[in-house]
Length: 122
Image (cartoon, rainbow, N blue to C red; front, top):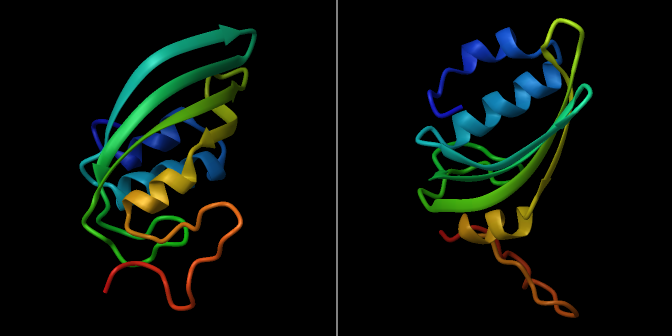
């Protein structure tokens, strides 16, 4: 991921969803930097916590227009590997609300709503 080589993802995964997610992340944050904080492995499952940061330059989740904002967030990832050592399945946990806020989207406090038309800054 730090090499930004999305073409190499198919060498490491047989799952189109894993390849698509990694490609979308690098395309949205082309200067993406990931730092692995810990890794735990058991049998065919590997879990890790990473911190990522990058500049929002492309579509990401619901934010289709790049904000140009720097985003930094932690992710918990788990991968299941097949008999060939390639990622066959994955699970992701992240604070997507923090990511959206850093990209400039309005997030309402509990019990309140975001005003109509609130979204990314003009």
